[in-house]
Image (cartoon, rainbow, N blue to C red; front, side, top):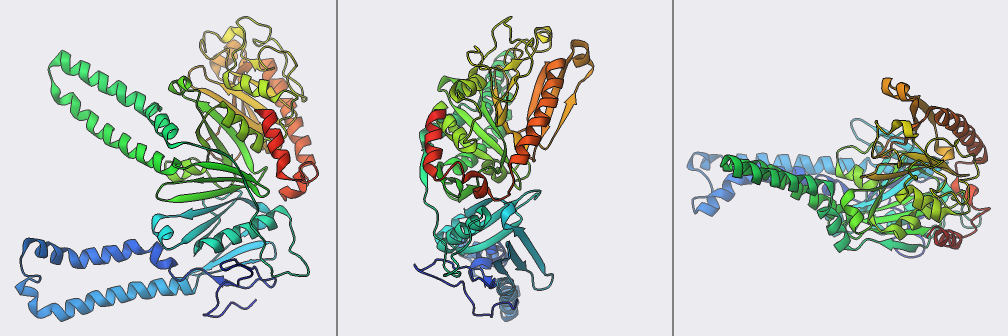
Length: 529
């Protein structure tokens, strides 16, 4: 295919700003302002280097130029102008040689004028598509598209920057292709409309602020402050207060970053997947196609129990590990803070078919349940077979650690456990920091049984499920040895059967027979709640 000419721009169809993907895979360019938005830091650095001394002299009322440089002013200006010209020329060349194409089941991006690079992603392997708007891009009405595929440590393809309408339309087109929709044969060049959405929930700013104040970081900083006061009173040494300064500054920075990322968080469901929007200064819109979530974790820190708040995080192929940067943490957060009804609503979107006739009782047992002291389910019952927990079980059918490990886990023994439904494995743990991990059967890639010296002594073992990298680490803790072995064999069979039923990578082909429209999702969400 021949690349588009220098003056080419994205073709439009219908309303202004809508991208029309050409059937012949025409190569298109990003917005001309893109390199300047990405490289404004370089321009600011050049201005700072050449203008700092002049600005300081202006504030001090001194001559703008030192006498020793008075005869070299033309050369200095020429040098500064040349550096600026080279920077601008580099930006223009970067824009000129950056092109993208959607054709033959791939999205491709070509970059570089000295060292050329082409990145591509298969549409049927697209795990998620994000629309990111940094503050400067928002001012100019531009956005960046990030395409995530499996086994990518970073975004497989990044398009920066497009007009916001073009970005939304291109996302809709690619999601439709990834879902298996084909363009109209009579209008192959027509732009596909953006799928409608139904808002499921939103997080109020007051709840977000409250969750930050009651977070684990706040607890430890407050504990450090109390310790400093006590030590200062006992030793009459005031220097202990100085240790709180870096902690307070770090906590303030963490608070601001979390508030900036979680502000105005909304979740919606649409035919092309789960849509998440959040951000105060830098906004981001994520679209997660159904079935792309590999594992999910619902957690509750101790102080959040006062208001019944929970946090939800997910593993998505392509997002990579949680990392230390704020972007990775925000992209793997399905719900920053929400009540039980919000959790059940989001669970109904991630797992439309819970695989049990009583999902409310089973998931509630996973979130807040506790095995009866000395009950029959305290490690003596076998792992539940596929088909769900037994009806009427007081603990939702969860198989917990046996009584003989009460010395190893005196607090967590009655919480640590697992339950299997037709569609997913549920793993709960933690007496103080409660956690519930949900792994769809078809997303179980491999498993391993771990047993240390103490575990062998007490005849227990840990079962680790391997999924894609992320903040969720599925692990059944201190299960009875017989129960762990039975779960290992049963889960392997369940995963194998679930993968057989998943015959296509295109999610629409999987969900269309049982979900003709998104109203079915809404009804199942009400059943979960």
